[in-house]
Length: 443
Image (cartoon, rainbow, N blue to C red):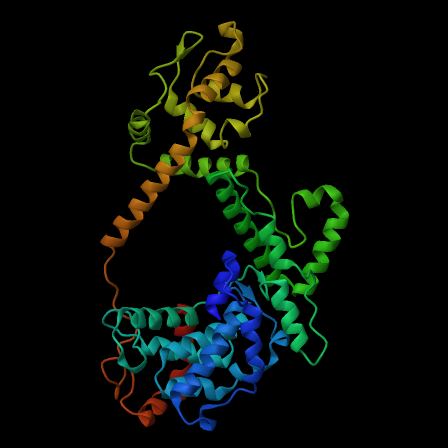
């Protein structure tokens, strides 16, 4: 299932597609509880298949799913016996994926199943190294990684980019399985439209990739606002009204899903502003800028002059960068324009005093000497920020684990027997409220 999902995204033909593989799920319904099966391994295979089905339909948690699209899977995962089985078998893998899939279906953090599962996961964490115990005690690298990955997925509340299924073909397949009328999804091409509107054009290079990343971020923020405020249907209707109000020009900037396109100029300007702010926070910004400028193979001439005045390239770059670069500054030569203000800040003679059009000369100097280096400066400051984060991480003291285990548990933080394990999850009433507060704070 996962292989055909990945192949479909990459455009690789494996001889059968994802929908053909998923057709076999119809023969696996209805799903069975462990009490109706002979072997725990068979039950694990069954519920893991359901998890993967949810994952491929939601782009692995990128999209929220309506339970009405997958009623059999939602009803199965909602059974309390699944939560209790994961606890009794001390299976972190199952618990983490169960909580994650329930969140994909829109189950709220305050739901009793989510709260109990999160409390169990936090108690099960190994206090020595922060990892989680594996199924069967396997210690190979992948199994240890998978246990911690599943636990982390179960604990955090995802931020969705939109609503699934993740493609029209998947949606059509699920609708064909339904006995009742399908739920409304507003736009039937939600995800596909969002992706195709930001596809990288051949020959565009890193700029197009950066545009795509920024567009996806804006799309995520738009969807987050929708998830916080309205249902998908209400959001789709609001987008329709907005499009009608703005007229045909809006469609060239924003898709029907609220997926905003961002120009490369605005993107680079935003990055440059952030880099200049970061530079200003350094101990010696001028020295840092000078060191970087000297390292450039095609750096500008030292101490350039305009109208008899030496130009401070550090001040020039920082002031223009704070406005998002030359492309984001109007080319007006007015004494009240942006370039005249920059000339004033770096104490160049005014156009009147110099007898020349200083803003125009300053703009030409910047575009000739510093503008070609903007991308290099943004990358340089990003490397500085990354290095600072790594140093801070190394210097960070190891925090005392919040959970030190409870009586009757072994070194992994889990009970020695099923009976002790069940008893451990029935705290006295006066302790229940305190435990719930801890879970909220940590989530």
